Image (cartoon, rainbow, N blue to C red; front, side, top):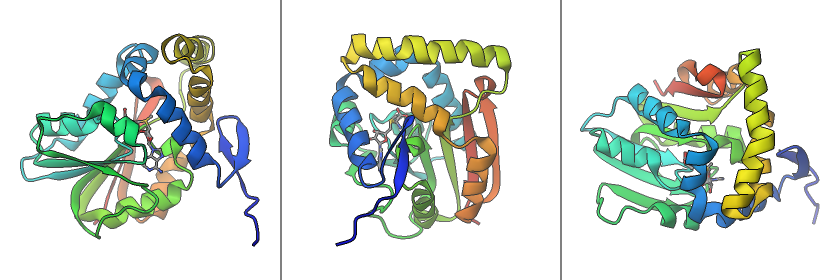
Length: 243
Ligand SMILES: C[S@@+](CC[C@H](N)C(=O)[O-])C[C@H]1O[C@@H](n2cnc3c(N)ncnc32)[C@H](O)[C@@H]1O
């Protein structure tokens, strides 16, 4: 049998394309129990504001269903329901991430273990689809975007929250210092896995910038594609519609 020798970024390293999914899974298995705490510490709490901004952009309504892709411990789904959405399904490839965030008393949220490159979902199901800090970790991102388009209802909207490219030189210097000098050490102290947080900061630098990501949305047939930067472009929100 022919081996696939194609390489892909895993942080600053290049790995065989078939290996990335397992490497990413190992990372989230190892940090899942401390994931929420590390999010608060490494972002100084900003991830909560960014996620709230995503929800503000969606403006959930009581008839709307959501699929949150790579939903992890469920922050987006929980906010969507709290803000008035009808129901939320979370899909994540990593069982431990889902288990660490499960809300036992919330029957509006359902949990699915699965790969967003091949969603186990029919066509045209959801009013809204989101992905927060997930796309960066996915091997075939274009395929994931195609799948998201497929499961959205016509008239549905997709929003992606992801780390992006900082557009201010002073902010970039401070952010690089924090990212490369502090975050991996915090990761070591809290999760005993410095490499996981080295991967995090490296993968951010390797991720497509705002314009490139917009063009990937267009390639997957999304319309009315636009983005907005938050915190000087440390993160950006990208939106596209299935018309
Ligand atoms: C950085 S976490 C983001 C979790 C959550 N969305 C948040 O904002 O806190 C990235 C998540 O993507 C998940 N993931 C990575 N590759 C995936 C894939 N191919 N399909 C579904 N989930 C995936 C990981 O298991 C992990 O839970």
